[in-house]
Structure formats: structure tokens, C-alpha cells
Image 1 (cartoon, rainbow, N blue to C red):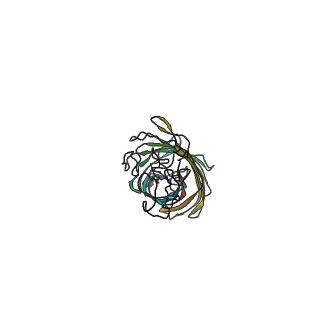
Image 2: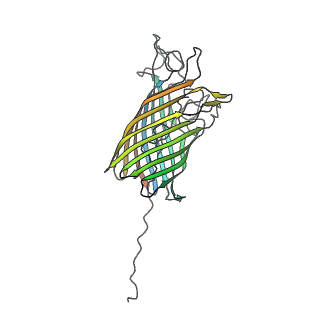
Image 3: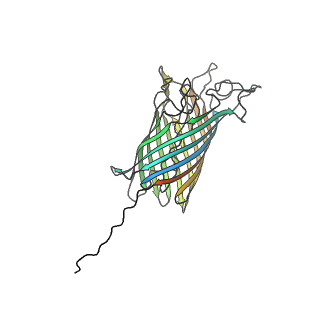
Length: 358
């Protein structure tokens, strides 16, 4: 399996951290559509902490710049193409995303945990082109499915609940939650994959492990995507496992440190006829983050570079070649987070003088 449309990102926010979700699309590179709904590295900067009660908002923009890679990239197999001289052409994927999201922290507790919820709406622009930006045609040959570019609303991302536990003054925190992608984005085409929306539901359980003490945010955000069947062509993508991690230090108003992620497809795709050889990919990325707290709002910027990838398991073509494809590239994120509303502080108790003195 390879890529379709990705999603979600947790942004570094006010206080300990604000949960934020962001989307990044990939491209429909196979019959079923693709792999991650959640952009790998999306939860970098997040933690198992919860900000004070209130309603928070964030705006995030990011770009993913990557090349199509794998045994199916280049030459006569599906996603490479050749130029007029018969030489392989590198296909470049470019994605731009803008996200608006809200985080609700009502101050409720359950089983000793603090509750919060998240709602996010992403907007996506994505394109494919031969390396160097020349348009398809003009001597470039090869089957590039899905068109040249797409633009629209991605599926709404909802986290109905997250529960966070803090273990005294030890610095250790744990958070669990369940997210979902609602298939309400721009969905068109014979397989429902000709725009940025996905014609399936995705359910994403998560667990976050954090050490938050003395200015440190050392966190591992572990989650897995379980996608339902494509309700247009009945193809079902395999499950995707993610780990996003960061080792951040806050000194004064500045936060900085190394970050990274690992992502892998852990089960095979399925069709109405059984297992499908859509291909699988693993990727590992490293990078860095820097953030600044202005008091009423905070800004963070981070980047990741995919330094290792493995793509395999696609259906062989007529030449016996593996047709699996994936992506390899870098991502740059920028996030602005702030609190929209906070509950009013309780009125001070008026101290009245007693009528009788002793």
C-alpha cells in the first residue's frame, strides 16, 4: 500500500500542550486509495498534559515535499514514466495544508483523569509532476493515475474524548483517546478518490506517554489507524501503525529539541476477493522543533526529513517487477495556538464584620 490522503497533527500549545489535529494528503496511488489518513509526525510537540479549562483554537499550515519511490517508481511500471529519450522520470508530490481546529477543556474529570475533546477541519492542495515541475505530456510517458492536482476540504477530524492522568509530582503523564475521520470531504470519481476526501471512515485509538517536569516534554505518541471499506469500490486499506516522538526543553519563553516519527503498514489490504497486494511501506524521520510563548498565544515551527524508507509487496506487473510505490521527502509545519475563552474566576467572598465582638 502507499499513499492517499493523510491527516492530523497535534500542535504545541499554551501551557503544557494543546491537542490539535492536522491533515496532510498524499495521493491515490493504488486501487484502494492509499495509506495514512494521519500525517506521520502530526503529533510532534504534543504531550499527555492538558491545558487549563477553556476553549482553545489553533491554525496550522504545513507542506510535504516528496518523491515517488519504491520498486514501482520509474521505468515501465505504473508510477514512473519515461521521457522522450526513454529515461526514467522522477515524479514529485507536493502538498499544502491549512487547518483550523478547536480544543475543548471543560474541566471535567473521570476516573481521576482530565477530559478534553478536539474538532478539526483541514483544507488541502496536492499535486503530482515530473521532477523539475514540467507538466505531464510534452514527451513524458507513463500512467499517472488520479490526475495532476486536487484542491478541497478534507474529512473532518473528531476526537470525542481524551482522558489524561498525572501521577503526582513524578512528571509522568498518560493520555488515552479515540479519534475518527468522518468521510465528509470532497469525494468524487469512479473510486471516490479523485479529490482530497476519503470514501471511508477511519478510527484511530491513541496512547501518549510523557515526562513533563523541570521544563522537559519527553513524549511518545502511539496510535494506529483502522480504516473501513471504501464504500465506492469496496477496497479496504490495511492498518497503519505510528509513533511520533519528541525530546523538548523549555527555557524561559523558548522551547526546542529533536523530534521524529516512525510509520508502518502492519496488515495487508483487502478486496471482496480476499487479500490484496497493494504494497507496504515503512518510514523513519528525524528533525527539530522550536517554539515561542508570547503569553496570550504560542507559535511553534518544526521540520522532519525521512531518512529511511522501505517499500515492498506490490502486485507484480507483466515483467515480474514489484509495483509497490511510496513517498520519501520532508515536511515543514507552522502552528499558532491561543485560548479563545476561559471560565470566569469565582467572585471574591465578601468578609463582613461581626455584629458582636468579644
